[in-house]
Image 1 (cartoon, rainbow, N blue to C red):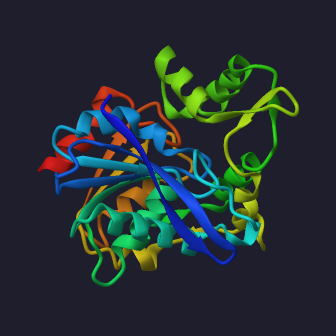
Image 2 (cartoon, helix red, strand yellow; image 1 turned 30 degrees about the vertical axis):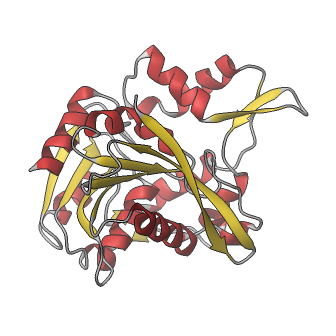
Length: 283
């Protein structure tokens, strides 16, 4: 894997914070893909697809604030779309190209839609991984219930066993892939000699603030001006089948690929999933 670890400083209401990212491929390549992870995940989720894309693209995979190697923000209220979008805009500017493609999983896809809906957007093509223009209240509640609980594990093996259950709907993974997710999704707490999930529990704040309801993004979707590939786990509770099908009839030019036997969200580590994305980006 020809990967480099990089970072930059984002500026929030309580000062600067470090935003880490991995970069793959030739630095001079002006064909750039930015991969944006789900709420509590990290950019290292994309190692497999980034390696597959790096011969044709330069690939950047950021850790959003509060996740992975990036800094935790001082106040829970700082987490939200405005902060994430600002940091992604900074990353795109740092990459020094006129246009980028975006692959976004869950929250990352929402951010991709929001970027692609802006006037003068640099987004050329957008891949939405198991997220769409409407998320039902039940899906929002499930995610909210899973985020922010400060679980501690006696070993990384115990943490990996937890991940195998929590991420089971994402589909079958190899032993090496499960260990990769455990190693890059955990941190060792020396004070308690335990392994913990490597994200800020305060990330749950935007989900729990106010009354939970359906998350309606149709007005954003209809302003997206670039081609979109919609990926859906056939068992997903966040991107319902009827939502995905309606997205093909309104808004931007879109294609839909469903992966059978998978829920939220496909990990994009499987060769068939990777090739579907690669083929579409190169079309």
